[in-house]
Length: 301
Ligand code: SF4
Image 1: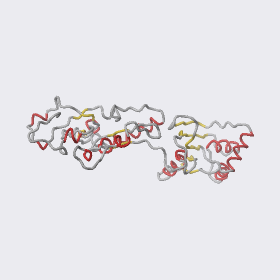
Image 2: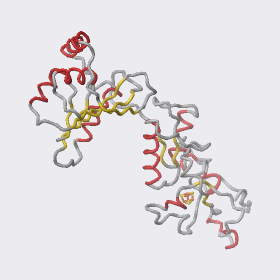
Image 3: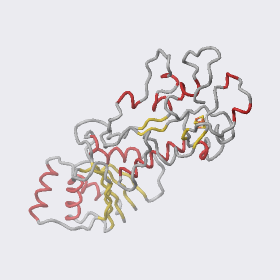
Image 4: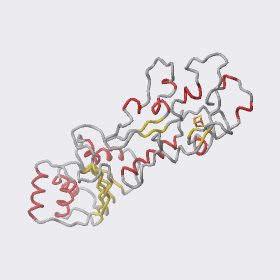
């Protein structure tokens, strides 16, 4: 039997990672022999609980911690069953009996009383915020052209006052995890681009990969291929202007990823590209919101 157990305070922001994660894991189907449990109560109570459970070959503990590491650091290690001196153990027992919930207390006390299997893995995430409150520290991700640059609702002449997240929060905005706003523009961007970005942010917060953003704070690898916007189609231009040569390009994941699984997508199948990943694309490539003089040239197309 394997036990995956969360430990933490339920309403202490990032310190509640253990119970929050367990609550989500409990919705998944797990193979036979794997149990999920929230052990977010005093270590003495957990000892009694472990007595009533089937013996485990392995326990995996997950918790948010405050250990002076950079926020978001993922620290995974095997518990070596090393104990402090008896006075220190006694002090931890006293704190646990007073209601202190701590993974370290639990590890020490349960080891002392012989309640843990030999194989214990600990996964800790360094908390950025350990104040009272609900929810974990967010990273801020803007998905789609409206969330990033404002999109069509923010085009010149629009009365909506709409704007992108960066304009609203400020270019210097940093989330509690110390990350800038990460932009994934497109109308809409491929789902794979979104998933890749989320995974990359998680790996970055775990200090496993650098944050690869371009000057527009887009995932660099996703927006390094060019798509070539067409002129406004309402102008019925002759076919030769649709040549790609010399037409300015915009970074876009669709030429490589398609809409899904490399299938479909405007640029991928030779369809009309309206440059939707570009900042101000509605003004630059569509121009349907701004008034234009009759016969005006298609500047910049
Ligand atoms: S190919 Fe053009 S229109 Fe299509 S998603 Fe990319 S930038 Fe937008």
